Image (cartoon, rainbow, N blue to C red; front, side):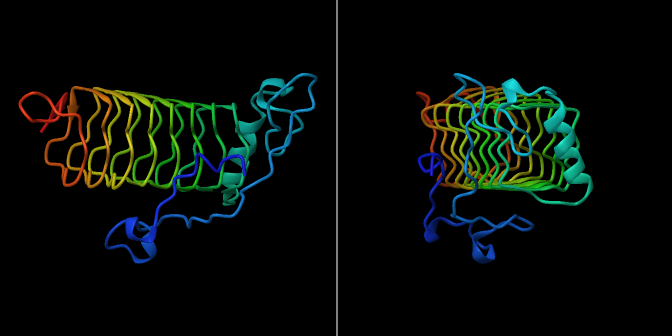
Length: 239
């Protein structure tokens, strides 16, 4: 499908170690089948795709708050958020604590003050999305794409963020403390004032990236890849 080039592909030998089936505890299952068929927006000349449950793309919605209300209702009913096209929607003040999100496309969406504590996210796309003051605390996120995303003042503390792509992302004042970031990619990312204390960074990749005041004290950097400073230490990293 159209996401073929964006889906992280991992072989069996690359699964998270010590976890049956390669899944982190509580993680939503990952599947390879096409997730949904994007429908073109009917507005003349529009290249966007129809938001799930609506008749137009996010730009042409009669009520821009509609997707937020729809997601809130689904989550409140305990329904899984599966195979949703939410490209470009604006979500503010939304509580999705404990939600199961799989196969979703949130590319270019705007998340402000959204709580996803304890959520289980798998094979979902957040490329080019903007996150401000969002809380993923205690969540599990696997094989998902945050490429080119902007993250400001967010928390991923005590999380399983396994085999995810943050390629080209920009993160400022973001906390990943006490999390498992096994085999996640921060290539070409800009990380400033980011805390990754007491994390598992095995096979995480940070080269080439711009790192400034990144705190990795007490973290396992075994097999992690960094750009090296002249003294042989990772540039921009406090260890």
